[in-house]
Amino acid sequence: MKKSCVNFIFIAGFFFIAASCSSVFTGGTNGKVVDAESASSPKEGIADVQVYVYTNVNTRNADYEKWRSSNRKSDFSPSSDSGFVGHASTATDGSFTLSKIVWEKFFPEFGKTADSCEIFMLFYHPEYSLTKNSSNVTVISDSTSAYIMQELKKTHKTTNVDLEIRNAADSSLMTSPVTARITVPQGDGTNVVYEQAVTGNATIPIRYPRESNFEPEISVEIDSGIDGEGYPNWHICHFDTTTPNYAFYAENEKFTQKVGGLTTSVKIYLKKVKLSLPRMSGRYGTGTDSHPTYGDETANGCLVEVDGFAAGSVYTRQEIIASGQQTVIRNGVFENLGAGISFYADDSDPYYTDLYFTKDITVKVGGASKSISVKCGSDNDTLDVGVIK
Image (tube, rainbow, N blue to C red; front, side):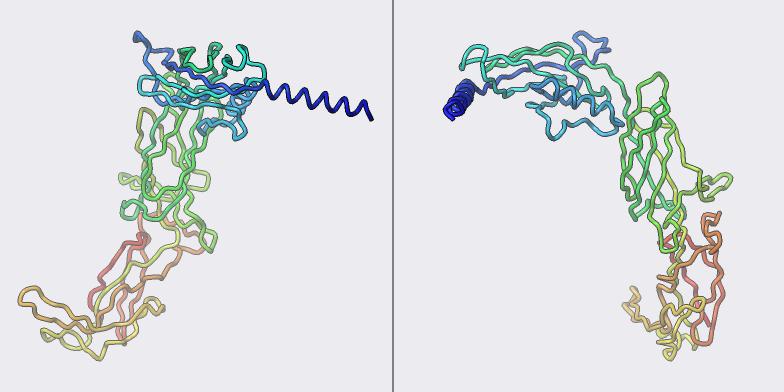
């Protein structure tokens, strides 16, 4: 029992002495990151390089290897449990300053008043990859020391893909969101896939290895969601006005295009798979027209049918003619017929080949009817069917 007490006192005393020897220090460093292949003198600085400082070499190396073993599509960021103690971004000339690097030492090199600390660094830029510091760096407490000159060699190019997703029926930009997936070959048999939600248009930066004359041929896929019948809401199609060719892409067919330079414009055209009738307007024309009253008021309230579907009813509309401010009464008016009526071009094969799908329909009002051919394909289509009598 006496021996155990002695051991306890010894251990407690050791930790007390160790704790009393622990001190916290701060120091700083600065430097510049330059392009290793720059022909100017001095070498050209690199802007927007992310500089990370660690006090533990193993932690720094673990973060480095983790990112290197990933697909490298995402920008580098330290692990959440990393021991990095400082971060800075380089200015337009490549310079950076880390003014407050903090470390703790149990037995400071110069007693409790001063110490030195070796730091370990990572430099990241999308076009220069991730690099460790090329030489040892030691900082001294209470000072900004150890000016660092770090050279980086460009490894990747960045091209901004200006993506436009258009409705083939009227060439307007899509107003409903879709998911775009861009597959970018890396020149070594591997690909990097960029995925982004797009409504109409977006700029998507992509990266690929820097090689002489290497311009990757990207492929683009569009996911517009699936309807209740298992078909896509929209599907990518050809848009060749010369041939012409507006057919849907086949199941294993992909849109491809070479990219390069700072910016490449990419246009994707989609067609609706499940179609909607255009919004139709017109007038039920029984009765005689006598200015300023048109049509037969007894027609008002009559049901309008489109291919057997109840599509609305006729009504009276008053209009004011600008010249003279005279009121005109139009009886038997109908508008927005067909809204909400949707269908497939063919239940067995809904993928029609033309820009529009032409559908023959019959509009019935009261005892009159009219057969017309309508173009379907755009949600924005409207059609004046004239007078039905």
